[in-house]
Length: 178
Image 1 (cartoon, rainbow, N blue to C red):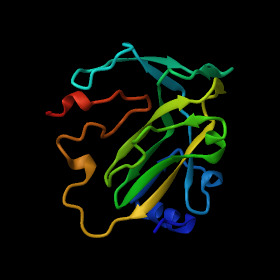
Image 2: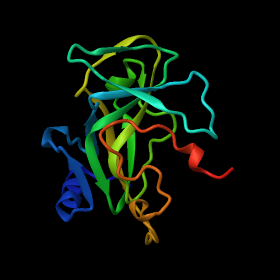
Image 3: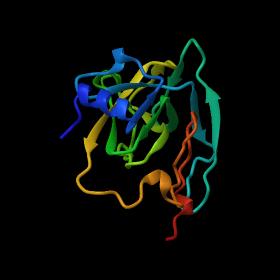
Image 4: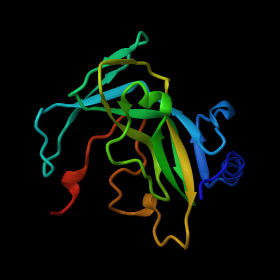
């Protein structure tokens, strides 16, 4: 079951969902549109190592836009800060974004109950495309949780992506033991 627009507003009133900044115009019948933040990043190294801390370089999207190219993996960020304390949030691309050949996540579309932060986007494109800060980039949908939560994500000592800032965050795979 997915929360409707009215239920999203009710949960925001209760404080179990937070979206900032929030605009009623971005609320669909069962989703909320999020926008591309002003910062992008790319990895410094061409070859990434899952056991190593792969560092990134940040850059700002200029007002005149920025062209993304295939075969370059970009990390972006939502302009919106979100908190979800009683539901499972899913971030999906908008159909308009997909029709431009832009993928906004490779595998990480689901958040956990207790996720608080801006969403890091895993951006790749099919052909060169010019993007702009503040453009609609995706949509959040919310699913109710069946049963009690023992430990919310923002309460876990080992939560690698809790309280993400308004800039992209690189992979923290290297913090896992394997």
